[in-house]
Structures are given as C-alpha cells and as structure tokens.
Image (tube, rainbow, N blue to C red; front, side, top):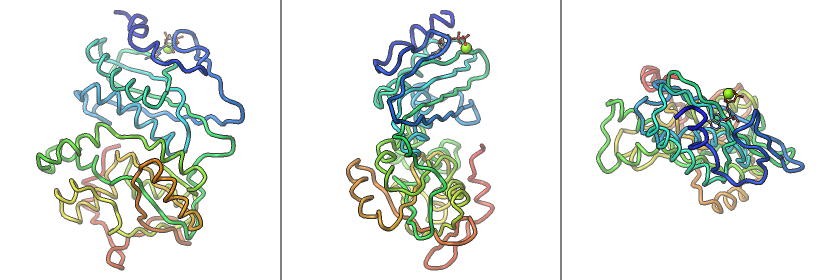
Length: 322
Ligand code: ADP
Ligand code: MG
C-alpha cells in the first residue's frame, strides 16, 4: 500500500461530526466553529525511545498519543472537537498501523473527536498529535489565576505511572496483583475531560500533570506569583503504591514521577462547596493537598507540621528523561 491508500484505508471516514466541512484529503481541513466560542489548540510529540519504548503495544500507543493531548484540553476546561495526526514510521507495517488506529480511534470516538488531517513520513518512529477544542468565549482554565488562600487540589492518585515505568525498567518489583494496574496507568492514561469542564467556573488555575507535581505546580506558582504549601500526608496514593514502596519513596514518585495526566488546580475558599458538587457529578475523585500563600513563587513541602526535604539524590534518580 502506498501512503494515500493507507490514509484512505485507515485514517478517513471515522467521524460524522457536522462541523467538519472538509476532513482528510484536501490541502487543508475546513472546520466550523460555533458562534461565541474560542478555539483551544495544543500539540504534543511522542518520540520512540524517548517518550515510549519503540516496541510498545501499538494499540496502547494509539490511545496514549491521543490521551496525552486530550489531557491538555482537559486542563484548559475545553470541549474536544478535532485532531490532526503526523506519523513518522520506519516502514509501512500494516499490522502496526491497524493496532495504532484501534487504540487511537477508540478514544477519539469516546470523546467524539474527529481526525481531520495529518501527515505521513518515513523515518524514526515519532507521533505528533494536535488537538483542537472549543471554549465558551472568555473561559479557559489558565495558570495565572491562583491567589493566596486558594486550596490546591489534584484528581486521582499520584505517581502510579512512574511506578509502572520503574517496574518496567526493573528498578522496582511490583506484586502480581498490582501489575496490571500500574502498567495500565502508564499505557492508558484517562484524560480528565469532564472534570476540566466542570472546573471552568470554579477553579482559579489549572494544569495537567505530565512532568510531576513538583515541577508542574511550580509553573502555576510562577505564573500566579504565589507560593504553594503542600501537606505530604495528603498526597493521594494508590493501594498499589503503598503496598509496593515505603512512604519516602512513594512521596518521591508522587512529587517527581511524570505521566500521571491528572489535573492539578486551585480553588478559592468561596467555591469549595461548588467544587464538591461539580466533581461528584462527574464521578472524579479529588484531594486537597495544600494551599497557596503569599510569598516567593515555589513549592514548600510540609510533613508532620515541619518542613520536609526531598532527598536530592533520589530526586535525580527518579526524574524521567525529558
Ligand atoms: P500535502 O502534500 O498537501 O501536505 P499530504 O499528501 O501530506 O498533503 O496529505 C494528503 C491529505 O491526507 C491531507 O488532507 C492530509 O491532511 C491527509 N493526511 C495525511 N496523513 C494523514 C494522517 N496520518 N491522518 C489523517 N489524514 C492524513
Ligand atoms: Mg503533507
């Protein structure tokens, strides 16, 4: 099959969205935005052996490539609409492409996202996805809105994807009963689309956790010019995590392990009640892990009422290669 046959066979005809005037097959896609909306756009590239193992299951990779991009829309509170896909493949391996499409389109269909175009080139395996979402005009969860006094929250549990990665690298042994869970956290991240939308009128700032809580929350503190104080005991840890490693290491993974794709957000005290209701409605677990205070931008860690210091050596060791 040549490039055009592959595109026709595998990458077209998946969506019936009416706002796609022209999908794959012309020079550009033509897309109709509803009135009074703002377009939210984000791109992420996954490179083999940098962001994933080249022999990773293509079904999981297809899911992951779209999921990490949708996570950015979630962090903005946007509704996902369209996606474009640039694939660089070492060879036209149809079994691989079929698997990739299975994972990719399963997630795309779940969120009613239409693939509207892309590119195919030959070269070292790499995947670039650009997602487009819509927001009501004037909305969008940005990083600069946090204020002293706001609570800091995260969805889900932290560090599980990093635990899965360390298990795969042979650095940490995970018991049989937790293996599927931690592997799945790395391979099948679930973008928090509904939670992001529910937070639109509640959160003062938000982002998704891709590089680890400590670094990512640092972005909010700098953009907002506030200081974060985290209570280590409040960090939400999974059963798999607490059963597998001792507390110090669990905290390291939760703070510095990447690839969680949970949301981290801040909420003014006056919206606390609303928050409970909104996130209960979409069935997403969330935890208050600290608060913003006035002061120099940065993240302060407290354990047992005292300042807590992460061991620098372990921090480096667990830092994922970006
Ligand atoms: P051009 O040379 O004009 O950039 P291409 O030959 O790269 O066009 O692509 C032809 C058409 O196929 C375009 O509409 C493009 O969006 C679409 N396309 C190419 N690769 C993909 C892909 N992986 N998924 C979806 N559409 C694709
Ligand atoms: Mg092209």
